[in-house]
Image 1 (cartoon, rainbow, N blue to C red):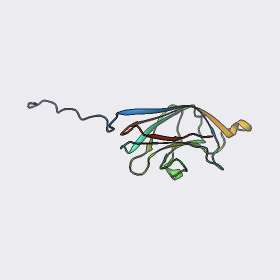
Image 2 (cartoon, rainbow, N blue to C red):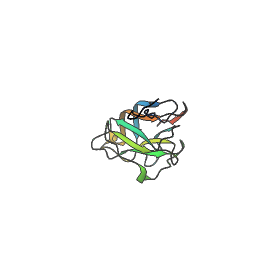
Image 3 (cartoon, rainbow, N blue to C red):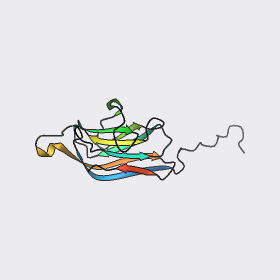
Image 4 (tube, helix red, strand yellow):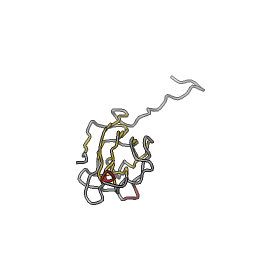
Length: 142
């Protein structure tokens, strides 16, 4: 029982039934998706309005790797204006909630000259969110 001047009980810090989880994907190679669909997509169950995504290994300056919200695995569903260009190792917020169900990481354009410029090696993608179930669906790039 709380008396006068006693602090109120702290509210729970997580909104997911399972607490915060991090989906960790390592060592992916992306290829330019301007003419074909080579994106990584992950759909997660979470009640929050945005997810935290950290991509490590993005070229500097990054002009080709995008992080976007997505609704389905089969195709891109967010307008380009909803996408962000992440910096390597920096947490980025991606819209989720009622409008979107997950995250897409994609390379759009070439990262350099020569035959190697058409692809980019990414060391790690970390998607952190409060989970309401253990269901995760994902699609890997070819």
